[in-house]
Image (cartoon, rainbow, N blue to C red; front, top):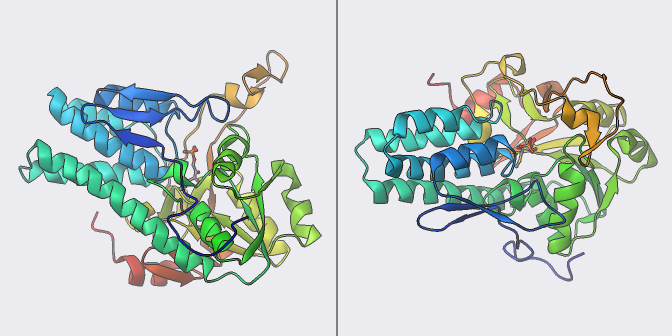
Amino acid sequence: MFAEPHDPGAHDSVRPLRWRGDALDVLDQRLLPHETVWLRCADAESVSAAIRALAVRGAPAIGIAAAYGAVLAARGGNFIEAMARLRAARPTAVNLMWALDRMHACVASGADAAHLLAEARAIEAEDLAANHAMGRFGAALLEQDTGVLTHCNTGALATAGFGTALGVIRAGVAGGRIARVYAGETRPWLQGARLTIWELQQDGIAATLIADSAAAALMHSGAVQWVIVGADRIAANGDVANKIGTYALALTARHHGLRFMVVAPAATVDMATRSGDAIEIELRDAEEVLSCGGKRTAPAGAAAWNPVFDVTPAALIDVLVTERGVLYKPDGESMRRQFGAAHA
Ligand code: MRU
């Protein structure tokens, strides 16, 4: 744990992306924690491929990667097709479309290459600033000696840095409020086991890994008071799409009287989508479920269903934290007040 509070920039050493002037380097998250390999993406097509293959993942990080992909697309002269491929790389996280819309608007207003790059850099810098703000807002809600459970990876690896839910956890640990951090392993892709535990280790934050199926027993034990998660898309009624398993955690937290916090930048809010039922949920290859760590676990011929996100109804969410502040028990009315009506 941290020795002393509280420099929010400290203990935040990991970055998933590096702009190199002529290419985007992507820290290949498929290989962590065992290998630290940077993938060089010198054109928009390789950025799309890195997003599709989860070399870079996490809603804000894929938006930022796509923004730099748009810079490469503009230089490559195949802008329209490249932008369409970037947009189609993954369907659920709205940050991807949000970032590409910003880049598109820039081009439409006649921006030159330098301005386009400045826009991508701004998207990245704004995300980092939002994460620090959310860290402050979220950590202030926690009591002393709090235990928290998180899911997937919502940290520096999933953002421009610091993280959303993991940013609140960073700030809560730095401020001395969080005494216990638990992370679910997050089958099938193991973002919790491979990425969250690794990232926290890099920054000296002690955390305990649990099998996803241990969450109810952990909650029953009294060790955690809050479940803190990120989001891929938040609908106008406050429903939240996030990593598969989030919905089960919210139901289980409610049963045990624990509080459930969602932390995401305003860029994750999609006021044009009325409710969670209208959010497209990405289905990935069944092989991800039939295997573990690249080794086949199910018998030949087995079938598997692999939705990689689920929708937590707004009614199960106690607090929504964005960089604009804290919404208690988000619903259609409070969402409209905070984020305005959809323009779409
Ligand atoms: O499939 P992934 O790893 O991209 O899913 C990531 C999540 O579900 C995160 O919780 C979400 O993107 C928020 S990241 C700050």
